[in-house]
Image 1 (cartoon, rainbow, N blue to C red):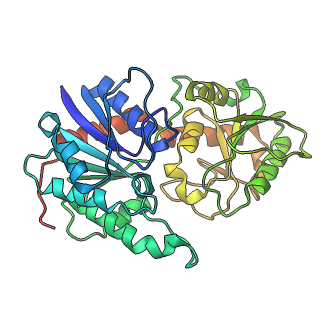
Image 2: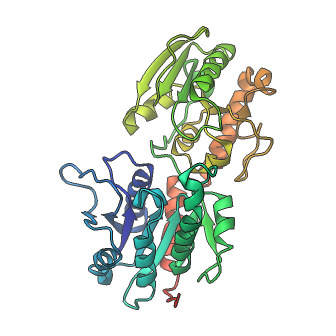
Image 3: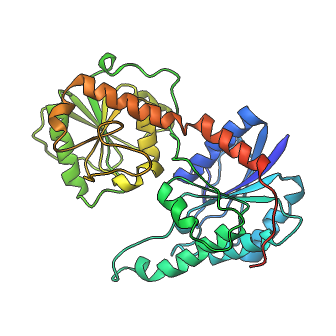
Length: 368
């Protein structure tokens, strides 16, 4: 039996995509690889788990370098590895968790410390010179490179993130494992054919929109649903416009528990996404659409897609391809292509990759 410590900003039931990712990963590592997780919540906010938890959970009461090192080293002798789920804003409100980077570096210099693996869920922020993100970006990059140099193993969810990490000097390894995120709302064993489902579409009204106004994106979604012959539009997350001219019934759901959302997704044929195409690989809700076999139409326009995705193969795009999208055959083909892409980084395959990395990498030390 092997034990690992997973460091996250927050744990369930807190609304935190990274916490959900780590929790589901812990379950898959336990069930498939006899690797048992413990969790250290080190984020800026805290929601206490209710009742008995599936995994041992502790909270880092004081976000300082010394407190962090002490919390890890107190259980180091029982651990095979420590997995840090890195998202700068999760650990410091300005996205500059220097205490965490310094602690990670100190652990890397301690012979008694376990192997250190970092999953970079997000990197630095960007923005105009009028925003704080612009001026803080150099500090955020400094923190990220410090964490990367101290890590024995590196992971991320986007090829662009991996390329940036590899530019860091003094890495212990140039091998960066890249796997887009898996669904945090389940992976049904059987996905019904689209034609066997009700003529319904779903839209997630939150997330990273590709520069488009969310309400305008929602209106385009309503129009598209009508053109595709859908009679129902399910809306998750944000508010629904008061009036639409589309001949569809709009059903708002807010935020649903994972099991309820999974059941709803299997009752839909297509999904409309205003999520920025550059970040599709890190979107948990997009992963949910893929795992449940939906055809996804993108609102934001880009001629090319990153992370081995292609228009017309895994996604359709609002605009020129819209007339083609009315074909049920085209919708089914795109849904099948997206599901096939997703299968390469499903929860099972991701857990297999982590398990191999946990057992394969050698413990190293670093002087910087």
